[in-house]
Length: 140
Ligand code: GDP
Image 1: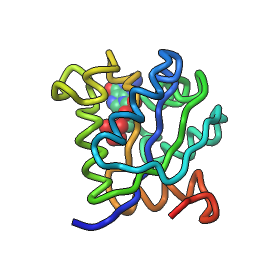
Image 2: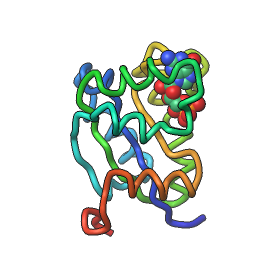
Image 3: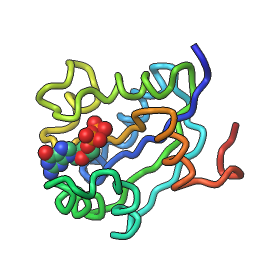
């Protein structure tokens, strides 16, 4: 096990449902620490840049529209194996296929509005953290 940092986003659907705290609680009660956090309303350019790897996918336009439909919370989570741990806590991309107890199973209804984002590798974690935070904004 190694200490890692990963980027999480509490997406607009979850912010609208007023469940920011319940999602943070899942992270904290499972050994992840918040190392940085901010609330922001993404611009179209930010959402397109963040999800650039998906720009050829049929759902890209819908994804960008959804991600700019309201404010999000962007956070850096730190802990042992934080990247995989966060992905496990999130559950499968499609909430209907997510394991019971996962964030997406408990708090999301559809694949296009699925409550949370989480980096899927150490390379994406590094890129995604730098996309939203500078070094001085990380507490450790
Ligand atoms: P993740 O890493 O589990 O978030 O999944 P992906 O990287 O494959 O996809 C990124 C995001 O695109 C997902 O979290 C969904 O919000 C969205 N997405 C994926 N598949 C679909 C789809 O078929 N339709 C729509 N509208 N959005 C999708």
